Image 1 (cartoon, rainbow, N blue to C red):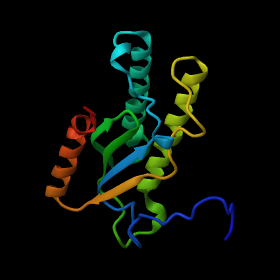
Image 2: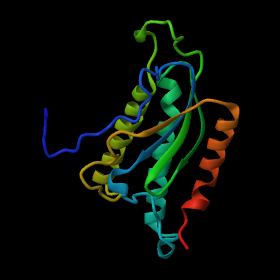
Image 3: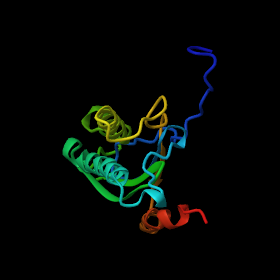
Length: 173
């Protein structure tokens, strides 16, 4: 085995030979490293400065998410939600690369997620150094991300509903 032998070998969850730069809707889930709950505010903290700071971290995440279409042509954003330890969102690539086009003509979903993860990590680190946000352990985001190619209007509606209901389903009694 090449590289660090102490690291687990990961199987790719990507669809083989699927072009992730082609037109379509994509549902992504990005988790914080080791599911750190960096965007959680407990009931005892309501109305305190930490709540404002965590709200600002969520605002930063949202602002960078909203920048994706500015950096990647023919990209639209759909439903999204920022949870205590993960992020869900739908990205639409409109008029993307046709199946017969050369690979260099447009950016892929992976390029967009890399932009998002890199920019949010750098901004969060700035906020940690400024004393606004809690430190994170080792990494901000987990390596990789989950994606689902949305293949029909019915599937798109189902994913939108899942995102909208996620805060209610995520709560623990």
